[in-house]
Length: 419
Ligand code: HAM
Image (cartoon, rainbow, N blue to C red; front, side):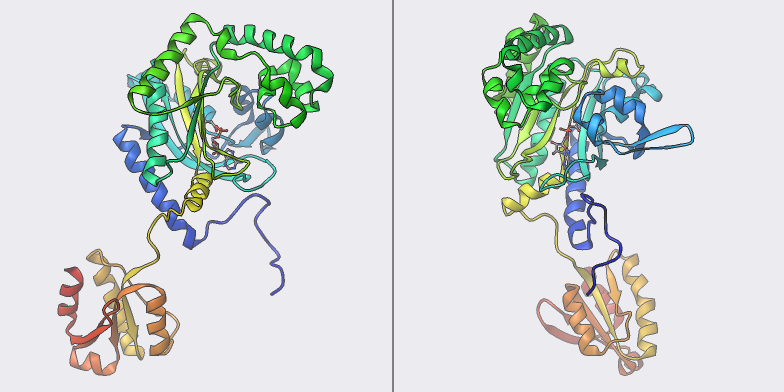
C-alpha cells in the first residue's frame, strides 16, 4: 500500500484500541488510589496563557526557551501546556481554592506538550498523572506525595526503581550556593560546553543537569548544595528523610539533582527506572513554596509530582507486566437471514439493559465467518439464530469456552448468562 497521505505529527502518537485497554487500566488505578489518599481530581484547559508558563517555569528553562508550542490569535497568546503545576496553581489562585479551607489535595491525568526531539520515552505529546498538595509546608505533605508516586508504581508491579532525593533549599541558600558553584567553575569556564557557558550567568544550577561529556569532570567535583542550606532548610530536609525512613521508603541522596523548572524550593526528587534507557525518569517533583505568590496568589507553600504515563508503560513492558484485560464480549448473536438479524438487533438492548455486553455481525457474513468473528471478539457465549430457531422459539446457545451447545429458549439463555 502507498504511504498514507496524512500522518500524525512527529512525536505524537495515536493510541489504538488494543492499547487503550492498558490506558484505561492505569487511569482507573490512579483514580481509585487517589481516592484512598483523599486527592480530588482537577481538570484544566489544554491551552494556557503563554505568560503564565513563562513566569511560572522560568524564562531560562529548556521547556520555556526551546520546547513550548505557542501561537497567537488576535491579542491572545496561547501555549499548549507543557506541564500542569503552573496551570493548577493558576486555577487555585483564580478560583480562590484556599477558601475551601485546609490544604488542597489535587490530582490530574492528561496530555502535555513539549517540542523535544522524539526518542524512546520522549514524545511531543505525552501524558502525565500527578498530584499537588497546596497550603502545607509540613514535611508530611512532601512524604505523602512521594508515597503516592511509589504506591502507584508498586501497584503496577514496578518495584525496581530508585528514588533520588535532594534539597535545593530556600532562595537565600541557593543564592549563596550559586556563587560557590560559579567560583568552582570559573577557572575552567572555557572548557565548559556551549550550553553550560550560556547557563553560567543566568542559571548556573542547571549546569549540574548537563548531559554534555565535557562538563562531567567539573560537575563531579562541584560543591554540593546540601552544604549551603539554611538551618530551616536542613531541618525540613531531615524531617522528609526521617518520615520516608518511617514508611520504609528507601532513597538515594543526590546533591546534584536539580529539576528542570525554576519554581522549585526545598525538596526535589525523581523516581528513576533502570528499564527506560536514556530517558530514565519515571516521575519527578518537589516543593514550590513561592509559585502561588509569584502567580498572584497569597503566600502558599506547595509540593507535588508528575509521572510520565508512557514511561510507566515502557517499564511495565520491560518487566513483562501486562496491564488490562484483552478484548472480550459476553454475547455474540450469530444471525442467518433478515428476520434473524432483526430479532438479534432487538435482543442486544435486552442484554445491555442487564449489564451484559452484546454484539452481532453488521456485515451480512456467512455463519462460519460470524463464528470466526465471535472467536476473534473473544465472545463468552454465542447465540445462533435462523428462521427455524425463530419459529420454534429455541436457539442454539454455544458456550465458547467449553465448546458445548444446546437448544434453549431466550429466557433460559438469559438466566444462564446472568448466573
Ligand atoms: P517533569 O520532570 O518535567 O516534571 O515531568 C514529569 C515526568 O513526565 C517525567 O519524569 C517524565 O516521566 C514525563 N515526561 C516529561 N517530558 C516527557 C516527554 N517529552 N515525553 C514523555 N514523558 C515525559 C513536571 O512536569 C512537574 N510539573 C512535576 C511537578 C508537579 N512538580 C511539582 N508538582
